[in-house]
Image 1 (cartoon, helix red, strand yellow):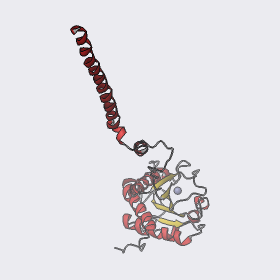
Image 2 (image 1 turned 180 degrees about the horizontal axis):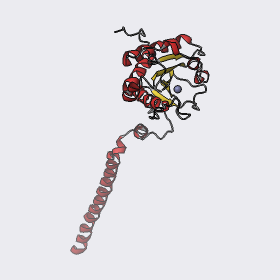
Image 3 (image 1 turned 45 degrees about the vertical axis):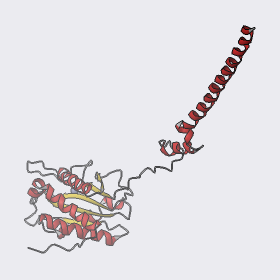
Image 4 (image 1 turned 30 degrees about the vertical axis):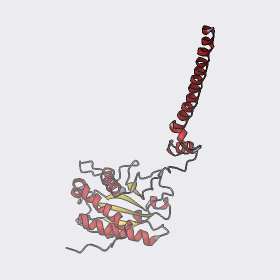
Length: 262
Ligand SMILES: [Zn+2]
């Protein structure tokens, strides 16, 4: 009996011990599970906020389009330069064995004017004599560059000429463009204005009747290919600088009075 009594006595505490251990395991398991859920990083962020952060930092997929506006480049003001006879014919030709052609003189100058104006912040169209872009062409100004005859006329056949597009609806602008070109070209090159030979070919120049009537336009004869040849062929930078400064004078509304005679 002692043994029989002992047995249940020893069995009962063992069962209670097992139950207590089971409860501890289950209870700690529940607590740990709760803790882990709570301490997960996303578990700390209030509901919905995580999604909002995602919207702010995700790259713009174009679905809303409002976050990062695409900058539109500001258009640069436009100037047209016609390189006389370019892509059309030779213009005047020297028949003194040099075969010097007006079209080449004009282009070497026009190309330099274009580069100068681009570096001043303008968009420049370098146009051919009968360019497809001339009809209704719109720009702040259009200047056509030509050179005068190579034939020896007399000792007075030296100097430059500038004429305006008389067909323009803003003749005051065209006249100011002429005044500016005359002033600055004379200052740069020291050539005289050869007023006597401004011809109807210049004032009724074909391009003047094609362009938009709000585009101020002028034609310049940069010098004679005979007596002014050295300047035109040896110093095109100076020639181009005179034209560039004339155009800038017009666009910037500078004083266009003639340089003082020396
Ligand atoms: Zn010409």
